[in-house]
Amino acid sequence: MIEQALEEALAQCRVTRAEFSELLVRLMDYGVICRDESQVETQLYDRFLRCEALLREWLLPLGLRLQHDSRFQFIRLYPPGAEVPGMPDQEEPHHGGFRARLTQQEVAAILVLRVEYDKALREGQVDEHGCVALSLEALELGLRNLLKMSLPDRLAERRNLLRKLRQLRLVQLAGAEESESLAEVWLRVRPTIAQFVTEAALQQLLEPGSAQGTVAADDGAATENAVPETGEGRITPENADHSLFVANES
Image (cartoon, rainbow, N blue to C red; front, side):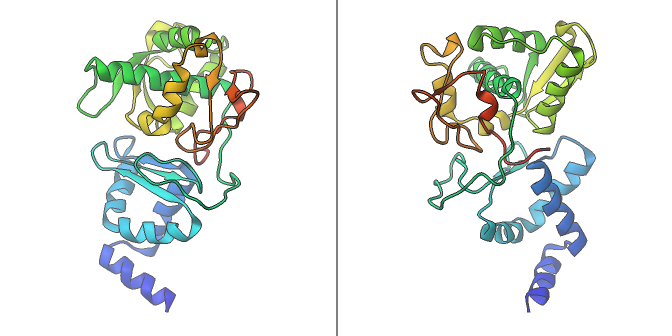
């Protein structure tokens, strides 16, 4: 009965079982699909539009929630218990099984990207796709001013950081990624950053005292994952690698 019902539902969506499986696996593996990222993700996103209701039905029993931004054409998968903008909080207990760990450097870079994106948004420096151009040099300056941190000195570590931000579909890269000069590398910050870090986390980062190297945190301070409290409810860049921001590793 289940097999037959699935086949009938897929036929109505004009999607084969193999195509549905590919979409589901990709979404659970990457955690996000952006239509403008590649030809593959364009096809997957367009396929998603044909079977969105069915996909949501399959994810619901797992406690996974799906966010679809039709304006900027991306979809993101959230783990059970995650705080999702525009959606009510889940009351069921969760233990972070789908949570991915980020390094303190990745957490810091993501927070600064969110601050810089909001700044550009207020100044109207956003393109028709909702993206913001940001130099790597500006990211470095933001890290120093807000968190008293800096980008990795080693080129390989810097490239790994940029690759991670791209895998999370938070940025696109332009310029010479392998360049030693910060001024030669530009990032195209995606609007996905606004859903990745909540307004609460952003406000806590900008609170007085946060620029001294501390980031205020409470349960659910990040979009996908709650940030664990330390001390008086604050975390520092040194223990920020325990802050979880994404649903899945890419």
